Figure 1 (tube, rainbow, N blue to C red):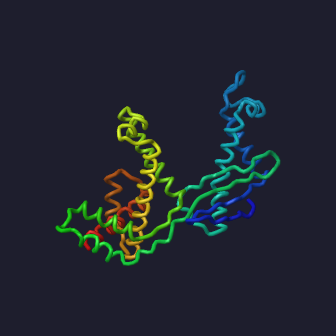
Figure 2: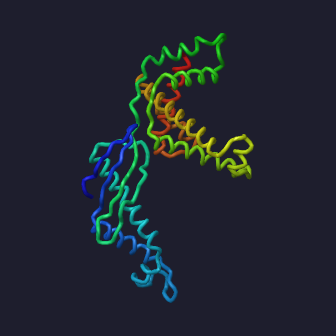
Figure 3: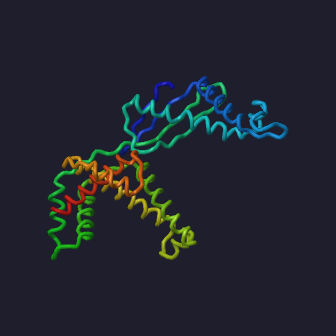
Length: 266
């Protein structure tokens, strides 16, 4: 892979442009074709015994090249991010710039890094939000008041890529729920007197607030040096039937809960 070109865009968004030599593409192409030939079923031949050239002609070129790209890009993208010491916050959006035989294949990858979070006097902000209440709020209301105060006061610029990714995840979950109820997104929108565009916009705002709050809690946990108890992690893995690979994720959840508990104690 050639040296990747890095272009920084607003809000910690970046683009990487890189190319792969045809020799590398051809080697991977031949490997993919050989694998497909072993399981190919063509009329007149036993499974896996058809000549490679006939198998190649029978295959959809788009799907064949798609598999080649799937095998080449993960490592190439990782090398490109390492070259520029990047810390991507989400999977890249890949654009194929050019993919011609006997020529280098060129790609563009778009992603982003997490923003820097400056908490400021967040404890004072939380106490101030609660001081406005005439009587002590219930736990859920207290957390909502604190969350709103933090989101209003701590300014965070998120990449549109990050927000859109979370919005799409939330919308996918909504669509799954609607499908179980036998409803379409149009019916759901109509029942709420909204357009689909309005629902998408609302989910985009929800996505932005969700990410911002997660980042704020993460930084608070780091500042307070909260640690996840290893025995608690083991217990949660055992109860949920999880795998050891889930340890990092569970540790993050536990530290997030400690941050929430700390804010509620203010």
